[in-house]
Image (cartoon, rainbow, N blue to C red; front, side, top):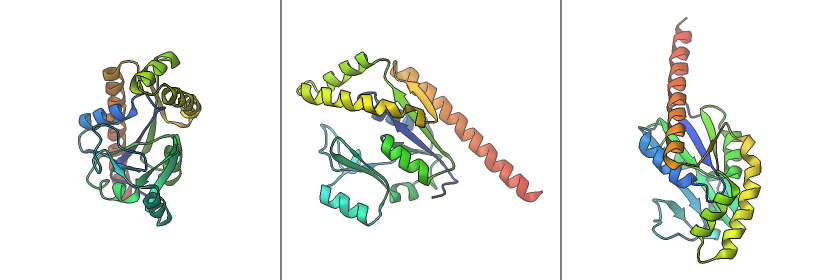
Length: 204
């Protein structure tokens, strides 16, 4: 898939590091940006809405969509399926400077295989495992077993950090958002420059 008009920005992190919060804040800071809505078989969390936060579907419907090749990437995370609809990218890349993908390392790996140009990946690290542990216990305060299961998965996810283009530590949220926002704006400027050079070379 060729997406010349915009940047595809992948944001990944282990559970509890803050990728969804950071991605939503980045969307507000970057003009003409769009946050792709993923499809998932997991149950909605409190305050999550269908077609706004995720497309919530049954496992049967998800597998049907997958068989119909409606996804550009899919992944299985914590026994739930996640996927990015091709239509989510196609309908938004022409009118956006940036399309954000809030996906895990499996999805990121699949996207990078299919989109070679104007695609950049960011991996978020926790300040430390002890801080991540506290965040996960706080998130799953009513289910300690689930919190430790997420921590175990997070340790595994950390192994894939070096597959990404840029690495940031989410210690102070605002600082992390500002640093990533600046990098993305620099990438937009560079892309626009290259596009201008391409037009100039054509005329030579």
